Length: 160
Image (cartoon, rainbow, N blue to C red; front, side, top):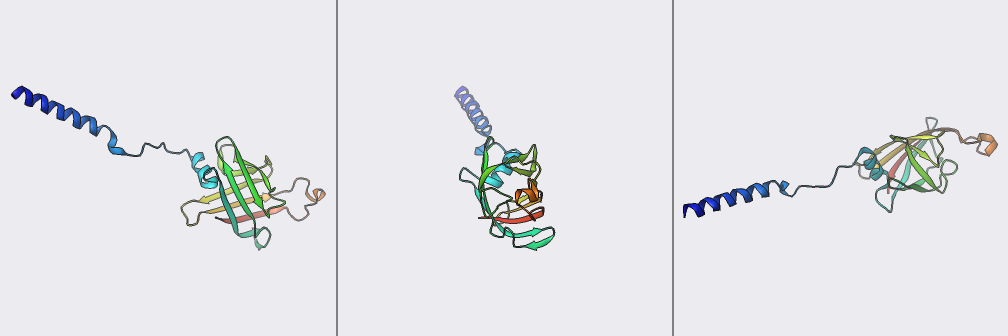
């Protein structure tokens, strides 16, 4: 009988050890890299995230330019696109965007590296907020028919 009790005790200890090594049902989801997290903050899931302008400044003064701008970011690790309304000439109706190389605090639209947008996202705010700042220079400037568009823009936006 002592032998059976010893086997039973050993079996119980082994069972407890195995169960405690399972981690207690914790979250096994891998942590996102900073770039993956920024992508989620900007573009969310497959349907994308739409941001609407709450205020705009141009060369340091409050401006009505682009006051009704909306932009929807979509993307994953290999493909990033956007759709905008009321954003011309700074944004096409549809196009591509990407981070400025490894800098996840800067965006480039449509491959135009001469206009780099600095961004700040507050995903914890309700609703989430996005600030985009660019010292915009039109390709071709006045010759391209975009007289007066050049300057520093600050877009304050909220997630819709």
